[in-house]
Image (cartoon, rainbow, N blue to C red):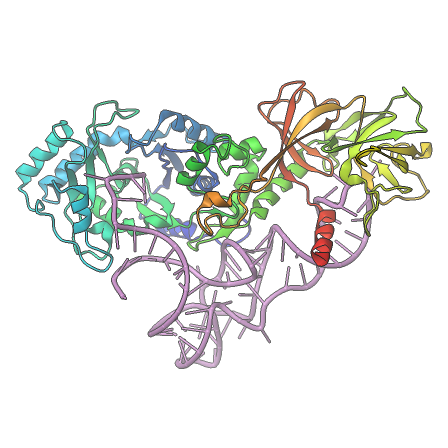
Length: 559
RNA sequence: UGGGGCGUCGUCAAGCGGUAAGACACAGGUCUUUGGAACCUGCAUUCGGAGGUUCGAAUCCUCCCGCCCCAGCCA
């Protein structure tokens, strides 16, 4: 799976733990909170969590960290499972919920209270914050810090009994208000939240905080390695503290750097803003880095997994270039995607010396990279559509496509030469090209004869099928969307261009999700809204375009 | 000027005291019925900086600089 490099630091740590007998079996977990959709950053975490388990012959649990009912919803749970499965990972029968452990957590909380290690605090949220101190000043103990165990027990039970209003009291661990690590300044374990939970209903009036809950969840499941992102590094002492006080199974937490990608955002908060603010069409908008979006865009699970593999695992903050993700998709689709010709921006071509009404069929490779894919038949006739970009009335240097007097090859068909350019007499707009074909070049080849530099794709006008093409560009105009004011101000207004053109006959019934290479254009997948007669294709990624590069260079020089 | 992390090519990232892997990107070339793909070549005398230890340092020590995270009853 990994390139031929050494093990990453997590693999090394796991190896060492196994060698030293700290753990006998590797059990990891992927613990999403069901309050949003998974994105490619989660894909990295999933690949690491499941990947480490698989590599060491262990298992990985899927566990919903559903400790905050004010934000979590069942439909997110469904979508997340769907996404993880789609990515290609299997949690077997090990689907767990933090909420399933609420009873045990409660009992453990009682234990801590009895041990004098937790207390009920009546301070307001503001008071707690003020007394927490600052980065440089120690906190001050709560006036309720030294309540008797009996009183704490009584109050805590009444918190859960629903006797107190939301936010009026919390249970706190009694650790150290002067700790330089703020997480250790008597962290909150439980808050009162008289909110129904999507799984436990009205059973609980109090809900555990992440730090208290997470280690317990890991412990209950016998997790060996609890892998998470860097921002939890500061929480590890607390994770360890709870487990140590309780004297229960103690997994090892290891932190790695989360993924960042250029020209997009990977934060649930911002993603939610984009979706709910209507800046995109939904969680599966193909411009989004969500798994649902990438899937609809035409990305394959294998390409995403490969990407996650190549970016590596480290603790250094990193922002990965988009080009790598695109490369992974192209690499896979080049080998697997059937070829077809589609004209995105049509320009009419009439072959003046081709008999009217005549139709020929040419044979074309379905995939030149994979001969076993076979051949397909393409109809050819007197009137064709070619790409507007494949003609220039006044061709620049190095442009070797069609222009007046010039000859090019129509792929799989004939050489043609442009003789006449028809324009709208009023607007001067290009209407059609009159060309002559060379009957000697049938199949697109003149054995032993003159060669031609350019090859164009085309479709036969009477046979072509109208279709919609959605061309996507990066969602933001800046590599770092947070640059400047607000990330929303860096949205790319041109991130979606929808155009109408023609597809080869035979594609008009392609099922949603099918992926194709439109020759010389890029990889496209059939959008779920497609219907026979109203096909819509999403451009997953363009082919590399050397000519565009040459032109850009030239323009930059002149401009 | 509290604590926790991180700094190796444009971007990721190996390297674990023996003299800077690989990938993407980029540049040039071969080939080509996709200006695609494939293939070949090039691309860090240098590892945030300065000292030190050593025969030898990206790797060890010291100091300095820069960047990220933490003051939710979010996760």
